[in-house]
Amino acid sequence: MKKKHKIESLLIDEFSSIPKYLQLVNSVLNLIKQGELKKGDLMPSINELSFEYGISRLTIEKGYNHLKKIGVLGAFPGKGSFIASTNVLQDIRIFLMFNKLSSHKKIIYDSFIETLQDKASISLFIYNNDFSLFEKLLNQKKGDYSHYVIIPHFIDKSGEYQKLIENIPKEKLIIVGKKIEGISGSYAAVYENFEKDIYTSLMKALKPLRKYHTLKLIFPEVSYLPEEIAKGFKKFCCSFDFDYKIIKDINLEPVNRGEVFINLLEEDLVRVLDKILDQNLTVGAEVGVISYNETPLKKFIMNGLTTISTDFIEMGKTAARLVLNSSKEQVENPFDIVFRGSL
Image: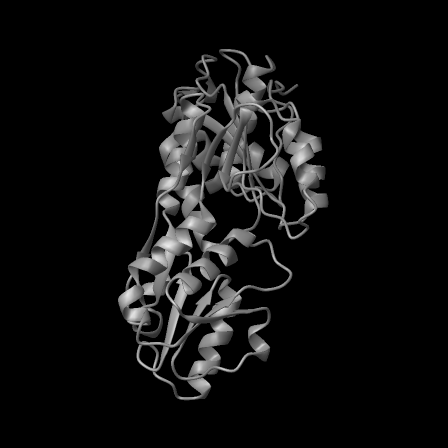
């Protein structure tokens, strides 16, 4: 009879945002921590795992190589891989929850992962700004992790999510992106100061903004966007005597010479640029555009889009450092304006 390998089950989720090779790594590490895998235990071959779980050989090989790199797996020449060490450094198990997938969220994720290196296992979940999905995921996974790193943006502004977050032990909690009012105790956070950030960034742009007579902020009526952004915008316009308008639906808004449009969502950026092009207006001369959230592509759009943005790389790094240092510090993330041709 063929010898049965000690490993009998792996948790591989076809719908997870985490690469399958990392799911394999995390699953093996968890089995070691649970005592189901011990030093010297033989691992299934790459072919066996590929057949049983329907995963490509390249994916399994990548996962095994990672486990070898961190000293968990060894190899018998011609006989396969085995558990070389159960001294697993990854006692840090992170529940990472993003409100949505986007290019700037990927920047945060990549920076977070790079800073942690091999010092933690990470499970990534996406709740699409949906409170009910957020609640379901959090309740399902409560108690399974050493740290809960959460970006809390919801379309429903009722505040029910605060009660859920309140129940997470504060020594395990890291909030990313915004501060949450009403959470008791000390907890870690890296956050944007939305009202101050947009105000100070527009102040830096005061000279080029004087070419225009009206500033328009595209702020959809139903969205997850923090109201503090609109407050900071209004404060700036009133302080420096600009006519201004907060637009709920860009589809219904005309575009005129002498106006600056500030978009907060990528889909609204596409719509406003379409309107500008339809009227043959010159961006950066007749009409100004400022886009919220810096991404690599924006320096190539319309000869370069001026952006106001938090530093997403630094946000990911800071969140990782808060985890590694078991810190309860609350850090305001850097925010700045990048000037390009659209203003």
